[in-house]
Image (cartoon, rainbow, N blue to C red):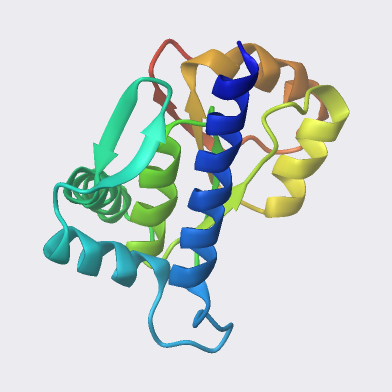
Length: 166
């Protein structure tokens, strides 16, 4: 990568951070409007505008909201109730954001776990979250399996993108 490409990449990143800060400056812990509400609003107001740029993939606001709605419907169909916790152990990709937003829409708390953890550190994170359910992406099955010995009770697994053991 040349110097001008690096500068352009950094300028794009800085512009994205500035836009994010501008759009979220009114977010407060006691706010009545959640990020899921904002996502729905942006899906209505700017449906085809990019919401997420991931590698070569562009996800529009309407696609992001539709994905979140699929996860919300799944949570409701699975019988998850408001305030319950679901651990998310997924790679960084648009579906991760969709899952988190969908859980939020369903009133479910998403416990976001660091995907670099393995073994005892991962089992501790899963245990401390107190979730009875865990959404696991196929790429992280091996990481999850290293934590099994340290789990006193195992959450119900919901797999995305591949086979799941445990």
